[in-house]
Length: 490
Image (cartoon, rainbow, N blue to C red):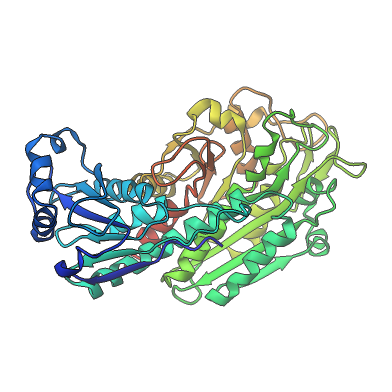
């Protein structure tokens, strides 16, 4: 996987500033106050910082912005980044500064003079997340990426505080890599193998094969992969860091490694983007990696259905009726509404097998979600206000957009079938909500449940707050925060 840029925390060494290579970053308040390190940089650069402050340049900047000087006099560095941050900078402002540094950094080493930073860990997290690049298939892009060195007063303490944050970054990178991979590389088997490799982190891994799912009666999930030569799999990741016997939180992800739409074939334009239709499974895998890396004191189980939706002589047809693990029959109206078929069986299996305290599923489920919310927010639908509100709070605290949509009987009635218990498509109106109501049918009575439709946020055509364009890793930070606040706060 893509390894996050190396970060080291060291004692403040002002004598080393002049010879630091790559880039040097120094913090200045919006009103121009300089800390000890900034004063040293000002002397080394023969008063350049003071002249910039006197010019009023920094007053026009927002907290978290940077002003860059190329080849500054008096420094060996190629660039000096002046970070505009107030002494009491918020988490958002601190991360914004880190993102700006990560964007500017490129392949160069970065020395951050962070002695006066209130939240150095947040600055580092922003820089690491933004420095992500997926280059696995670029033959000419093998440049070694320079490290980040952070000079602080108490490096051991800051490093200890940063360890969980860097575990989050690793989980985000794992998710981004999975979402970025082309389908001829990330097959269902390869996806399962990457998950299985996480047993080395302390996760208990179980992979169910097609014969196992047939015995369990998972006709809905298996119907999605009938047209593909790639075998359908169900991968389970268990992290048991909490009290023994305590019910886990279950995270369920849609893992369609490529979605042609099946017999209900998608238009050719844009179909190449369907390599990201496993985004929900990618987020679940990334969260589980983060929890294992930071040794979370919580019990969490992640379950992902891995399948490829292809047309062939074996493919499920519109009008077919399949039987779910629950026992409900489903009329397949549209084979491109396949994610909900997958999730129906995985959700039921999760509840029957693990008796969780709550269930959260993630899926790039509906184009209607993008029509409703664009690329700023994931859709959130839930049968439980407490769990939903807890997630929304976590998402807001991590800067990951999420917006709640309603559920209701009228929407559920749109999924009634004349020939089966339910159909898999209710048409265009309220498509995100009717899809959630389909899943709601497979949530057991009394089970707290949140559905996250991440179709608009899993992969982006433009830069995101924490990353370059492409796979965003949305949801890893919010779900990790939810676990920490809900399960580890005692």
